[in-house]
Length: 105
DNA sequence: GTAATGACCAGGC
DNA sequence: AGCCTGGCCATTA
Image (cartoon, rainbow, N blue to C red; front, side):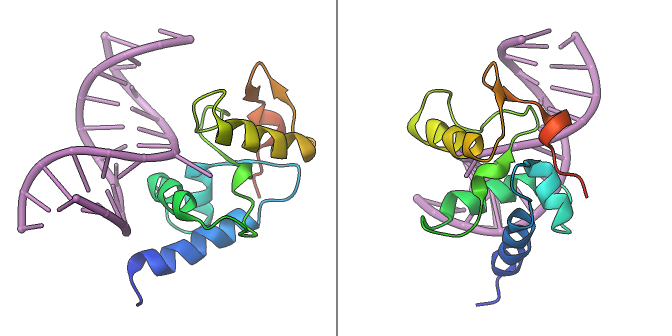
């Protein structure tokens, strides 16, 4: 079915997949890069439903505060943090320095 | 059809 | 720093 989500999902996933290794992006930016301004929320909704094993680097997507969108200390939070650290993204005080790692084309 | 929810954001206090 | 509000849009009940 060619629902809106179907199309937007591809655009958003494509935008997320375009984030280079070692960089991160915010939800708002991802939506904007996908050609869907102000769809930040939709990005979260889609990533949430994303099947595990997907090749989408969802861990490179953060909220505008440079923090992970999960409660600090939770399982998915640790998982995402770990993945980012493997890509040379450093955490300072539990937050990421967006000035340094934010990907802006 | 309406109402509530969400891995959000920016602005105001 | 924090918390609340309005907005945005798709999904879900």
